[in-house]
Image (cartoon, rainbow, N blue to C red):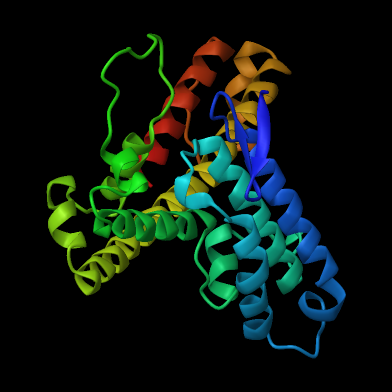
Length: 276
């Protein structure tokens, strides 16, 4: 049997999460749809009330059993896409409004991203497992290693402990201090909260940098394309004048070849982009 359902989660023989993530999104989307008219699209309810219902029902369904997941970036993007799509419906935001995901989360009473909620649950579960006695099966599985066998070459699959180490690195929690921090529940809870706050800042900054780079690069390509079209539509002796009409703020010396003009223009644009 390749896959079967156990306690509401889909288990596969190759430990693949694709079917499980799709099932989680499908069930959470169905729950969101059943409550859309009564709650999420109801103008008589406050945004905070809608977000509270969404977190209590939809997020619980979406991240059910996520403590044992070993997700890849593709899975995180799938969860995040559903997360943001629900917030857009609640806030009445459409694609032509050009609102970033960071701003959407801030408008939605500062709710966290799907990856943040996933990391929060997994860190909580790791601390819970470390508190277990050494004879408990979850603790034995967490610290256990195979005596025989080896991993296949050429990019082996991500292991759960590898994923936990990545989480700790993202949250600035030292793996050497994991046992010590998790011995006290309050200390572990505070360390997780501080680490997730650091992760939020770095993730939001990275998203802003990607958004800025995405808005600058198309503008640069558009200017070069317009200049190239202007230069190729006229004789080489008139190329500089044609490009100057397209971009009057850039001074280009007269050259006998339109190709040289375009190369020089591209160099000037690259230099101005770095200065900005």
